[in-house]
Length: 185
Image (cartoon, rainbow, N blue to C red; front, top):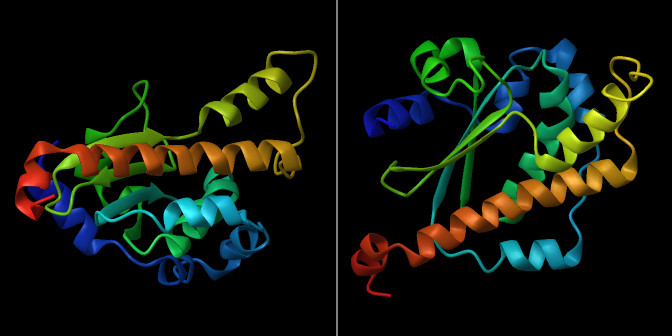
């Protein structure tokens, strides 16, 4: 992925609260989600040492974003090395088109980068636990009512899956020969 495109999108993106302020009416759904990290999860995030610019293509209007966005923000708040920014999917058409998933513009789509904005990883629009739970509901005899709250076990598994991806990216960055040479570690 083009480093200049990633850096330009990251520079144009916003911190969480400023992003939510772009659509105050819909931001209420985001603020109603309580994403609480456990002590071991916070401890793990405290071990991160490489800066991780992280960009979320999102929509304040998006239900999946409203459910998962607060989880991403909770992870970033607990991880001093995580520089999380938010950008509306439609405000970055070049990036949106570059990160299509299954031929579509999915949100949320999270892009992790190295400190110099080299692409590291991408995950969107849902984690594996989220897809498993959706499949159990939608591929079975009935579908949930739109906007239904996540069951607590699904929310916890989804939060852990996002955290696992942040950890995976941090380990990629820590073990990168290029970055280890640069930082002398």
